[in-house]
Image 1 (cartoon, rainbow, N blue to C red):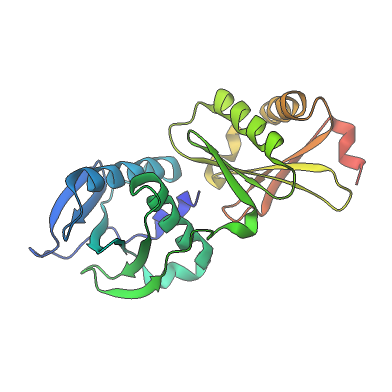
Image 2: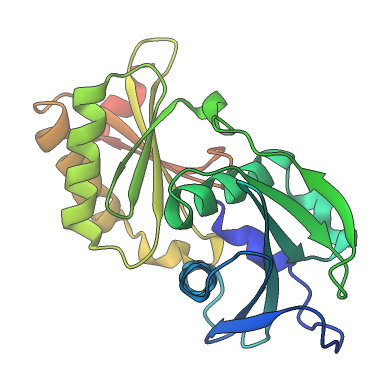
Length: 246
């Protein structure tokens, strides 16, 4: 989920010969040593490369990471801009560690350290298996992740299946199913603010109608585009007269 956090990464790394071996994927470089395999480093590089391409495809600067292992624990280091951290809550960094744990290390403990451009740490995030539980229980289907905030597993699975077929994503797409005080269903989707122009009225209607038909048997739904914390940026109600139901 937290794709836009990569924009905080410092676009350079101070020269040094002690960072370890290096795996790269386009503009991502991952240094690795102390028990980390080449394959694990390469998979991590590809993962962050996909996220960077989704969040900022025109950013051609290098982004640097380091992976180390201590027993059964993985340490992921990210070179970051300390002055910009206030723009992102801690949940985003916990989610990054969880994502790497699930995608690369089969659920192993991954601790995250934010560092300067010499991999000297200045802030640590200890691994939390349920780091994003405040959004609901997570269900994944390929590159679709859906957080269930009390709607129920069958609907979550149906939404994930529909969104997979609709978007055919090449990187992680994040959704949440929740309800408002009137018990009306709200489907939320994390969206890049720079790409809002894609979501025309016709596209919003198409997506909302699809959710209504394929997930909720034609019942009205509210569809929201959100930031990375599921805070709404734009709303569309289907059918149109459902907007006044609250």
